[in-house]
Length: 379
Image (cartoon, rainbow, N blue to C red; front, side):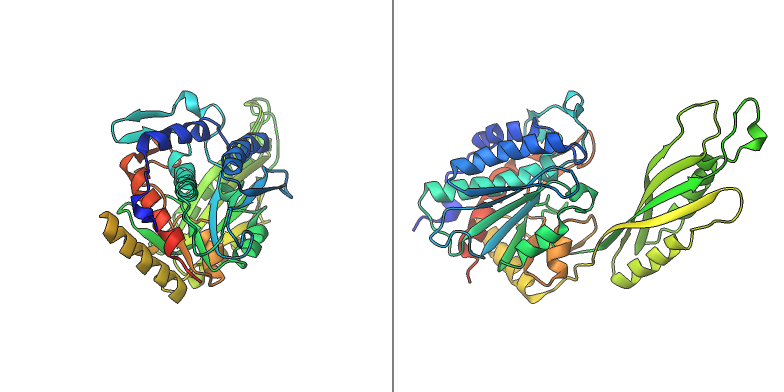
């Protein structure tokens, strides 16, 4: 049988295949853009002979895409390749962050998080099929449209699909040392609104009560609650339309991350305690979506890590494993106790910024890791 680690992975070929993925911008809140991305991916999967389903979003976001790869037991539970196709970059980002290669670095919106990893794992399946290599277990692919906003529309789909499988592979970007993630911290989101009293800012300023001013005061209070084990970040702020009006409404969003469920519960309590209907400006806080703690060191996950480390030693890379912040859909599958190996995608830097890039040499490296995992994960 062909050694999967010796398949003819080609860097230039992978970059050529990745380019249309990156140049099809797909920000979460633009459902049509995400669906254009899913169209591109659907074509690539159809070429592989996969059976494909498009699953509409119950929240009006983009579709999810579920595909089962050719196999004698096609469609049965086995290995789930789980990833997202939405990005944080709005349409038009390509003008500032064009797809380009400079030596061992390749730039592009969403290339690191996480289109690069998704593509590499599909390329591994492509090469396995072309070589006539049958994986011990059938493979199902699930790509979702809303991970960057906490997976509010597709969590139930992710969990239901994951429960059908023995192993879950999540090719989110690798940790800075190239290692994998075997547990994740909890994340909670909050929607905040201050409501004041409008007035003409020039004619009757003293009669108004500014919702913006009250929210601005809260930024320091909220971010000042940050500790090493539980962080608070106010990352969205919307208010005002006319500069000559005292703003009566201000909306904001806060993200809290904690290493344990107990710490998250305490952080949630601190946030909810900021609700206030006293004084001239009301502060209302509503809890949003939450990613539960994925506790590390679960036996099934640790067995997957050990296998990845064995494959890594054969291809000359070291793969550590640890818990990490920065939520993913691995939070959900790991929380359920399902064997999950996360952050096994490409290496790079600058995700969510206008310097997002990957290290080109990680493409073939991770493709070999993927091929090894697909061929050595057994029932």
